[in-house]
Image (cartoon, helix red, strand yellow):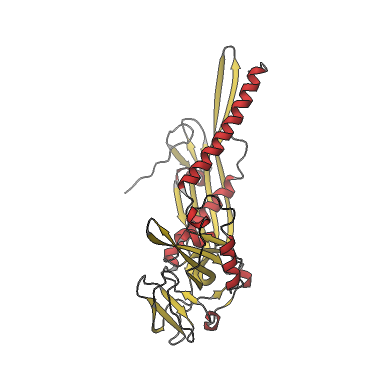
Length: 360
């Protein structure tokens, strides 16, 4: 049988439980502790945040699915829509059997940004972007394809609670004769609290880069409408190929980071603060599937004799644009050294002036 021994945080001696006071007592230094506080100090990191998925499924003949033979993307559409190309790789896609039994979205955020507006946003995006590769600044940026696509998301709700212990220090420096004396006082700071989270978005498409989907946020979910196949008219909907359980880890990270940051913001007056242990748990966790509007724009550029496809995405509700085009390495380095060099020159001039004035 395993035996758990708790040690005093102050002196390291074993603690014993006192039935009369209901506390853990240290015979060596006389300190006493509540059992919950010791558990928190010795608990390390623990997360028990869970979400339940309660989603309807498609009935037979309710929706059609297209499968891309090249990249494997599975796309949904209402019966009357005829698709010709995959929005991800532009390959031909073929009509498959009616889909049945897969997860049915609860809500859809409709498109409010029209195609002409998305094209204009794309054309204006390059203005003032001096760090972009020259192929985008010195040649005309032609749109190869623009697709109206609904991207699957999971929205996570929960009532979350956190119990965090921080190690904190206060540093005092004094001069005693010819010596500078540094004194450090150590503290353990305990914070606990709860927060309600609603509609934490995590995209359920493996094909769409997470960095692009997260950059398109936020969406105004108050404008969402209940899902009906007719809503997809004139558009395609990416089928969620990542289920709620697979997306849950990203939602949990958002909950953990938000709660730790919030509790950390209440710890003031210390020179340094680091997290010692943390515990997270939740109630009423649930996940629901929704569709978000995205204009996917692709453009081709010739790089060193080879054609390369770049993807741009426009939030179909807000018009926010993002892309997978990296900054030109040479330009980025030049910008950094230019700023660094200018800052160094200013600092040198200040120091030189102080020296000439006899201040230093």
